[in-house]
Image (tube, rainbow, N blue to C red; front, side, top):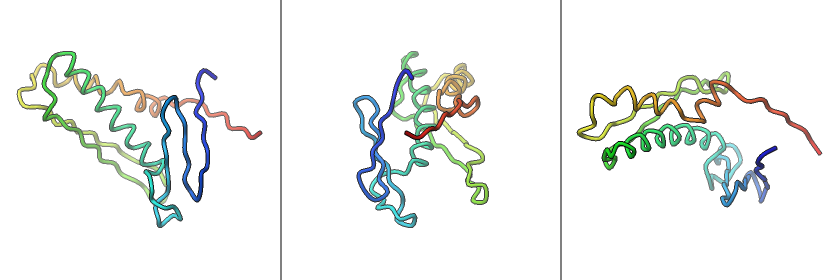
Length: 131
């Protein structure tokens, strides 16, 4: 493997992952037996989609010297309780004032380059083992 993430279990339902110089802590909500001390892995999954799309929108604007101080992004999603899966993700980018009309379709194409989204569309293989 080219890269690794190391995971530890410091207590109750907290799970910590070390990725490079960062430690990412997750927990479960109180109703699932956790302490609600950090986002759940599912929350981080959703956040990674929204922030990835946001990053590509931000870089698109920065490369064209478009002010992003009033730009924002909202992602909605449906969750099917029976299948325990997300259905539809709806990402809406609120463009800054004065955003050139000629770039509207291009900024959407830029957001479509999100690596997280692309991994969902064309999923990788998983090899799970125990030692």
